[in-house]
Structures are given as structure tokens and as C-alpha cells.
Image 1 (cartoon, helix red, strand yellow):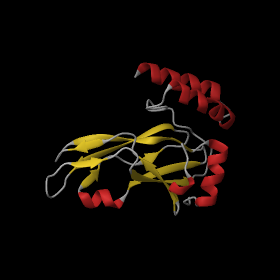
Image 2 (tube, rainbow, N blue to C red):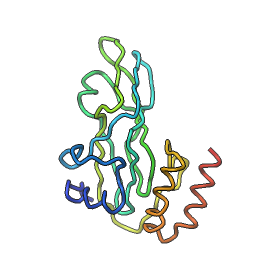
Image 3 (spheres, helix red, strand yellow):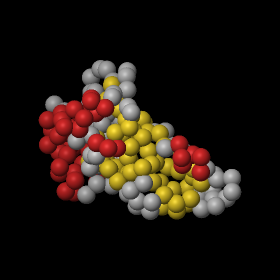
Image 4 (cartoon, rainbow, N blue to C red):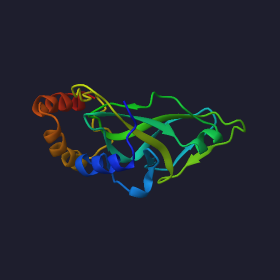
Length: 172
């Protein structure tokens, strides 16, 4: 396993649309900085999910990990969820946060703020794409249709996978 660098991320973007919309200026060292989709204010001890503005697709030979920008940790935000993005996942990401600030004041995150780093890590072995209930989360039908050809070209068993994804989406 290894973290993929800038040049490899640009290649993956061209091939798979790993981040949409993609902005090269948000490449940061060995990762990409995702932004927040809408304003979020957390009161002291309040828990909320912050949703990325960008859609993420994790290619079949990768997994991804999220970390928050350190400035938010310094403000007192704590990140609750395991920050792994499975191979084959497509959707906007939800990062669970809670305000634990020492001064007990509200913390506001603005739409468009740079909020979380995503790093793509090379994985080995046969692809086993994510087929859980969160596939295509927070995506419109139009956005899903944009990714279907990419998934079809990427996964040989796409037809059977798409039935599982559709069933999971309809059941939740």
C-alpha cells in the first residue's frame, strides 16, 4: 500500500472522475482537499454530519482515508466516524463531527470551506467494490447517471453489482 501523489491523482481524475467537481488547486501534497456543501453551525456538544460538496469515486485499486483540516481540531471539533472510503464507492462523503470546544461556543463551517483531506491509497488484490446502502449517497439521479458508464467500464460484473446497488438504494 502507498499513498498516491499529485501526478497519479490527476491521472485517476481523468480516467475515473475521482472528485467532482475537481479543482487542481485543491490538490494538497499527497491528497485532495474536499469542501463543505452547506453552512453548518454546531452548538457545544452538538453532533452533526458535514457533507462534502464534491462527489468522490474510489477506483477499484484504491481505498481512501479522510482527515479533517487541523484548524478545525484546534477550534474544538472532534471527528467521530472511521474515515475510510471503500473501493468502488461513489457519493458525497459525510463526516460526523461534534463540538467539544473548551470555550463552549458555537462553531460555524461555511459552504465552500476547505474541510477535509482525502488520501487515495493503492490496494492490491481483486476489486471488491462497495455495495452498501450508502452507495450514491447525497447524489441526484443526473449525477448517478454520469457515473454509471464509468462503473460499467470499471467493473466486469457491473450488471449484477448494479442490481445490488439499486436494491440497497430502494430499501433505504
